[in-house]
Each structure stands twice: as C-alpha cells, then as structure tokens.
Amino acid sequence: FVKRCQSFEMREKAKDPNFQMNDQQRKALKHILTSKDKIIAIEGLPGVGKSTVLNGVRDISGRKFISLIGWGEKFQGNAPTASAAKTLKESAKLKESNTLHSFLGKYNGYLEGRGTKESLAIKKREFKKTVLFLDESSLVSTRIMHSLLKLQDMFGLKLVITGGTEQLNAVEAGKPFEQILSVIPSIKLNQIVRQKNKLHKEAIIAAAKGNIDKTFKVHGDRIQKAGYDTEKLAESAIGWYKALPKETREQTLLTANTRRLRDEINEGIRKRLTISGELKKETMEFSALKQMDFTIADHKFAPSFGKGNIIKFNKKYKNGINAGDYLKVVNINELTNSLTLEKGGRKILYYLKKEVNYENKFEVFHEVKLQLQEGLKIRFTKNNNQLGLVNSETAKIEKIYKDKITLKLEDGTVKELSKEHLKHIDYGYCTTIHASQGKTVKDSIAVLNHNEWLNNQKAWCVAISRHKENFTALVQDKDKLYKCLLNNKGDRLSALELVSGSATEQPQKDLQMKHNNIKMGSKGIQIEA
Image (cartoon, rainbow, N blue to C red; front, side, top):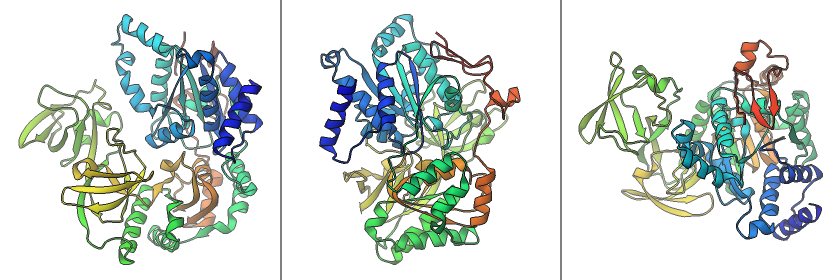
C-alpha cells in the first residue's frame, strides 16, 4: 500500500505542485482499499479533503493488473445535488457521477419489487465490483437513504458514504447519516486543508464543537452589523457586492440565510448593475418556473394546488399526457380530488389517488417574472442533462435574440439555447447558505438577517467554511446572532429518538452492526443480509 500511495501522490504532484496528503487521508485511503466491509463511512469537517481520498481509491484501484484488463472495480459517484455530484466527479476524477435521485430513479422498479429474479441476478453480477461513492451524506433524508441501503443490499455493491454531522441536514425528514455513524465504525478526518489561514481553520473546528465564542473572536471584525431590518441589510449587501472589483466578484460566493433575502439581494444587484451600465438597459420580461414546496402528501390532494400552477409530468398517461409535458392547472375539484389541466387548447381531467406516491411522477411549479438583460448572471434551478445544465450553477447572458439566448457557462462553454429550454432559471448573484454546502470558493460573504430558526450552528459552520482566503458576514444584529448560535445547534430529532424519548441520550440500544449491514430496530431502517 505504501508504495502505491506514494506513486499516487507523485502522479498528483506532477499535475499540481501544491498537492499534499496528510496521514489522516492516507489512513482513510488504506481502510477503504483493504476493508471487506460493504458499507464504509468517512466523517469529516468541511474542507478536510475527503474527495482527495476518494480520488486516491479510484486511482490506485484502477492501476491494479485486474483493473487494467477490465475485471477490476468500477467507481460511480452520487450526491444529493447536481452541483455536488459534478464537484465529486471532477475532484475524484470519476467517469460517472449523478444525483442520488436519478440513480435511485433508474432502479426504482427493483425498489418497488417489480424486478424479476433473472434481471436481479444480472444486476448483482454488474454491481459485484462496483464501488459507489456518496458525498454530502448529511443532506440525504431517511427515506432516500433507506432506498439506497436497500439497493446496496439487493445489488451487493460497496458503498462509501462521506459527509459531516456538523453541517446542514436534508430539507426532508430524518438524519440517517448520523444514525449510520452510530451503528458502524467510521473514519474521522479533522485536518482542514481548504483554508490556509490557521485561525480560520480553528474557527471551523470551534464551530463544529459549538464554540461560538472562538468563531466570533476569529472573525469578529469581519462580522459587521449592516442594517436594522431585512430591507436595509439587503441594501448593504448589494452595495458591498457592487463595490467589489469585477474580477473579485467572480471569485466571491454571496449567500443569504433565507430565500426572501436572497431574492431581494439578487433583484437589487440586477438594478444596481443596470444603473451603472454593466448590464444592458434593454430588458426582456421572461416567465420562469419556481418549484413549489410540496411534501409527499401534498402531491396527493387537489387542495394543495392552485389555479395557474404548472405541472411537469415525468411519465406518460393514457389520457394524452406525455412524459415531459408542462401543463397548466385551470381548475381544482376538491370533491373528486381531481385537477383540470390544459394541453393544446383542450382540457384533461387528472385524478389524484391517496394511495399513490406521485413524487417521481410529476413536479409542481408556479410562474415568476424575470427581467433578462445581456450581461445578467443567472442560476439554473433544475438539471437538464441533455443540454449540460446543472442545478445551482450559474451562467452569464451574452446575447438575447427573438427566440434564443446565448449563455456563457461557469466553465467558459458558450451555448445558444431556445427560450423554451430556459424555464428553470433565476437571478444568480446570491444563493442560500443551504444551497452553498459543498462549494469551495476564493472568498465568501454571508448575509444573515435575524432568524432564530435558521441561524444555527450547522448553518454557521457551512457559512464560515466555503472560502479559501476571505470571509465576511453582514448581519442584522450581531448580538442576536451570537445568542441564536449559542442556543440553536441546528440538530434535528429523528423519529426513532422521538418515539424512544431518548433525544438527549444514546438512542442506540436496538441498533447493531451485523456483517456491516445496517439494522436499526423495528422502528427504523432495517437492511440485513
């Protein structure tokens, strides 16, 4: 192993003279390569170089003789978001990396018990030598993690899950990554390599331990009161961003703790850049689609919908609805639990059934009006694999034509797309702290209004760990922020903890490891051989 690891480091240094590996990373690399366990967990702070370890696993395994003749291990990447999946693909140098949602959707038939014995046997042979990397695991919900573990058990693949418990959880219910860490041994990484400033590294470690005093001492003069209300705070953030040199702006991540604040900042920056002449004054009003915050249950009941909502269907129906159709809701019937949809001038009746899970069958949006201009920075809000558009990535509008728009993507690629293909966009100057998890940038600015729920230790840890060099926080009230962070860890109780009443204890008496296949008692995930 030592010789192979040294060879890997030499190859990486030849590409990047600044490349380094520490002993923790080498230990993690060795464990993954030599362990016979089918599920391996890597727990690490933000910026500890988890992807470097995964890259080493892929590189060293790929150079074994058995791999060179085509019989070795195959590697796939998965992540909860498209942006994280793309980052994983690039940093670990994987041939394939997808969103966890798309991976599970591909094999949904097996999850629902529709796979034959013959086809399952084929899949087992296919995945026998597959190692699946899952990054940003804290963002995975219990329901999704259960499906992944079920597939792991069915196909027999090797699963390497990485993440940090001190970062944000999934929007959906549960904290399965933390629960898994309490069941199986994990490799811990805490030597931060992203930040070069020693004090900034110490602040991240302190935030992970709940030591807010330390983080405020380190970043004290860069945590600035910038407005007594949300409107004034947004104005300050807009002015701060506008004052940055253009080159610095391109290397700066601007985040907000709420979507409303994000939207105010984005609109304000657009207007300010128009006044200064950095954006072309001519605007084109554009109808974009913004996803509705629907729960699984909301999809099943007609009253959850509103007239004018747009539904994108992901499967074909006998009543004339095709996969990929965007249809408008023109009427809602609560009595029959049905929706009247409009397609090409005709009406289609769509009945909702309470026993059906519609989450993967359709998505619900509402229309928002955007003002598009040449020079404007936009953000994609939905993946489009055919066109190479990645959710949460940004692009600059180069030219607007009658039916098409020319965009310059983050990697410098120029694409000319029809307006029909750009339904899922928003302004791209500011994003939410939650959406920024997994990103690495030169500088970052976090804008935080007073919000006792969202200003928590997990969000703070994400906010202060994105940058390599400089961090600034613009806040509504510094004292209130400090108190919020002291009192709100951002922890979420699992259903298992709530039922057992052991939220402050170790709720793991009925959790056990059996040949490294997860068993979480009758109330939780059970994946056994």
